[in-house]
Image (tube, rainbow, N blue to C red):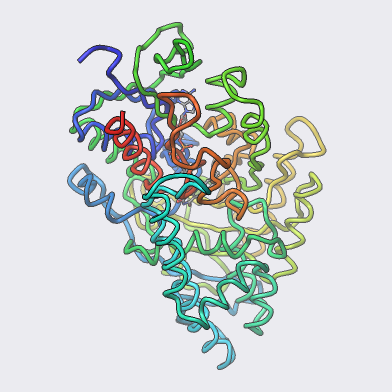
Amino acid sequence: MTDRDRIVVIGGGHNGLVCAAFLARAGREVIVLEAAAQVGGAAVTREFTKGFRASGCAHLSYLLDAGIARDLKLASHGLKWARTGLKTVALASAGDHLVLDGGKLESGTLSESDRAALAAYHAQMLRFARVLAKQHNRQPPRLGGGGRSDFMGAAKLGLDIRLLGRDSMREFLRIAGINIYDVLEEKFESPLLQGALALDAVLGANLGPRSNNSILALLHRLSGQSNGNNGFSLPEGGMGAIGEAMAAAARAAGATIRTGSPVARITLEGDVVSGVELENGEKIAARTVVSNADPARTLLSLLGARHLETGFVHRVRHIRMKGMAAKLHLALDALPAFARLPAELAGERLLISPDLVYLEHAFDHAKYGQCSPEPALEITIPSVHDKTLAPAGKHVLSAIVQYAPHDPRASGDGPRRELLEHTLGVLERHAPGLRRQIVGSELLLPADIERVFRITGGHWHHGELALDQMMMVRPVPGAAQYAMPVTGLFLCGAGCHPGGGVMGAAGRNAANAVLATERAA
Ligand SMILES: Cc1cc2nc3c(=O)[nH]c(=O)nc-3n(C[C@H](O)[C@H](O)[C@H](O)COP(=O)(O)OP(=O)(O)OC[C@H]3O[C@@H](n4cnc5c(N)ncnc54)[C@H](O)[C@@H]3O)c2cc1C
């Protein structure tokens, strides 16, 4: 084997690590080069205030592919769960909270018709999500042209939709084209239930409840639950524990992982990949380079537009990838008391999204560059279940703040201070006294997420997950099979099919694509 035979993986996010692990298991020499000091990417566990640690961006596991976890033996590489199967609590300002376990109401007030509709809605959405879940571990077929496997891939997708049965198939096609607002208005009476269910459809997306594609985003989120994982779960040690276990699996298979190693550029000999050059000038030869960085960063910045055809560059430049979610971390000197919420429920998944209009208004502000006075929140207090995150008796609150302006009108630190103030105002209303418990805080806006985690646009999925950017056209038409138009270059991150969330499928699919390309050569 020569130096040129090695495979370089740029980025040690969870997808890069999964890709490296499967390539190393197939006997390849693999080096992972991660820019940050730790592996895990946006799902890393970091100290944000002395003694308090939180999951950087991703704070809940609900998509992790059960097959990948099993194949890589993540449990024997150290992954433990602090809590699985979290319930969802839709917080009501008047205190009549709804406690939901999937499609079941555990406590709170709902009409009989809403209870029945909830069970039916949940079952139906899971059925639809299963169609998406079945595609996660398949390479998307080429649109037009292609060979037998592309034909079979397209046929399998068609069959999966057809197997829903006539009525479900009609409903699937109907709702996929509308939006979560209209669907929830049609099915439920309770504004609180509608608000909570809608938040799940727009978390991480640059979509309001009235936007097209919000149903597809919801189905992506639910696809984990129909794929055999543990529902909303918290790894012991925060989400970074998943990446650490994946890194251990990759190392055990023979991969080398170097942190603190930012790649400056992908090098070519003629029009074929020859390796990478690090920011410190070090050159590493490689026959294949697989990038876990987002498609825009990989192709426009690390490779360079001049090596690509103009039409392709145009498509990459126009990937919609403006993040609208912010991440809040609070270090607290005690467990916050949410009004009329029994203390034993404080560790569940808490949502503040009281109705559809509230959520749409929060989106409207961010859309026009402003900080909503009333953002919607997905809150976890992982330290209730995991004592490794905060000093004894103290707690960490982690919240996704939906929405944050991607392009704030105001400059400097104003938008961060404003959004923090508004978010704390919303929290204080639900948990009086919380402000006094704060001993440290961090609010990451989309621009911070871009800078800290090197995700262009700070987008949850490395690119909006929408009909025009999904499956056969993800990240862009003509590049959905992980191989890029330059020989030897592949993508393996959330920007590829099947998209973001801590799942690992893009990493494994990319490893399979690399191995298939080698076999075909
Ligand atoms: C606010 C927010 C909240 C989220 N919450 C959740 C959640 O609760 N649950 C969930 O499942 N998902 C969540 N997500 C989504 C999830 O974090 C991402 O989809 C997922 O982390 C993507 O994984 P990845 O491995 O593809 O890429 P990343 O995690 O982005 O990893 C890419 C890696 O590449 C590295 N890199 C980039 N450029 C270079 C370079 N030039 N040289 C070397 N290394 C480089 C980066 O440093 C990074 O480590 C959230 C996202 C956001 C933004």
